[in-house]
Image (cartoon, rainbow, N blue to C red; front, side, top):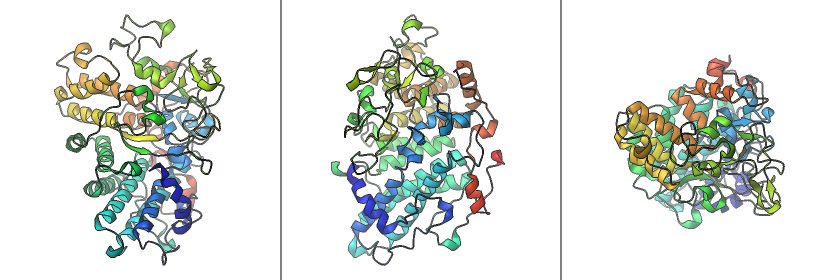
Length: 515
C-alpha cells in the first residue's frame, strides 16, 4: 500500500487539474479533464482513489511540521502539550492571540481539505458510472466506500477546526463555485452518513500488499470519534462493540510503535502512509535538526509532569519521584515520547540533547533518531506513517462513553489493558475500586493524555471537554520563557475562515468568533 504513491503522478495528470493544490474556491475545474477517456475501468477507479488518498499527504495536512511546513501532526501545539517555539509557523502565534483571518498559517488546512473533498466527490460520482462489465460490483462498492471514508475524514477536520463551512457533496462546475456555509450539525450529519455507508461496503482487511487502504475498522473508528465529539455516547459504545470483534490489539512495545518498525502493528487501525524515495518528498514530521530535537515543537512542562511514576502515583505523591532525575521511575510512555537532557537523540552522530529548548525537553515520539531510509539526513523528509486511528484510542473512547453514561465499572478493564501494555499498575490497585463517575472520567482523561500525546488529538479533547481555559492556565503556570498564551474564548477554540476565501466567495461569512 505504501507503493500507491507510484500511481499518483499519472493520476494527477490524468484526472486532476494542475492547480489542485491552489485555493479550492478559486475554482479551477476538477471535473473537466479527460472525462472522455478516463473513469472507464477498474484500473481507472484505482488511480482515482489513489489521488484522493494522496490529498492527505499535503504538507498542510499530515506530512508537514518541520521548518515552517505546519501540518496536523503539530496541532498538539494548539493545546497544553507543546510549545510551537517558532511561533511564525502558526500554532505559536495562534495561542498568543496574534492570528487574524488575513494570516496565511491555517489557510493550507482549509485549501487542502477542500482539495481532498473535491477529489472524493469526483471519484464517488465517476466510479459509480463505470460499466458493470468493467469492474466487479463489490470492488466498485469498496472504491466508493473508501472515497466516502476519506471525504468524511476531510470534513471531520473542517468541522472541528472551522465549525460552520461549505458542505459540498458533488463535483462542481465553475458556475456552482460560490457555496455558502452549512452548519456544523449539517456537516456532522453528512460525515455520519458517509461513514455509515462506508462501513457496509469496506472489507475488514486487505492482502498484505494492499495494507493501508481504508477498512471497516477505520470507518468505524472515525465514526466513533465524531460521535464522541458530539457526546453521542450510546453510539460510541455500539460502534466500538463492532471494532472489538475485528482482531485489533495493542502493540507490545510502545517505544517502537511510533517508528517504521511499528507501522503494521495491530494497534494501527488507519494511518496516513508515506514512502520516502528519491522521486518523492516523503513527510517532514519525523525530521529533526542536529542542534536539538525538533526545535520548533517543544514539549511543555505540565505535560511532562502529568506522566505518573511506575507505582501509578502522580509525581506530587509518589515516593519514587526524584526531581533531579525526573525521567527515572516514570511511566514508560514518558521516555518513549520525550527526550531529556543527556539523552542521545541522533544515534549515528552520538549526539546528546543538551536541554537547549525553552522547556528543557525535546519531542521523541515520531521523531527519527538518524537519517531517513535513503540516508539524506535527519532534517530531510522521511517515510514514517502518521497514525490517524489506533486501537488504544478506540478502547479509551469506549471507556469514556461508558463512564459518561454512568457505567464506569465497565471502564476498568479497558484502561487496564492500555496500562498493562507498558507495565503500569491497574486502576483498582492505585485509584481504587468503586470509583465515582467523575473520578473515572478523570482517570480516562489522564490516560488519553499520556497515551495519545503528540498524535494531534489534544485540541479535539480539550475543546469537547470544555477544558481549554484550564489548559491555558496550565501553560501560563509553566512559565516557559518567550511564551505568553492568551485565552480568547471562542477564538482559542476555532480557526478563522481565510480572508482570501471570503474575498473570492461573497456567499461565505466569517466564523462568528472571528468577525
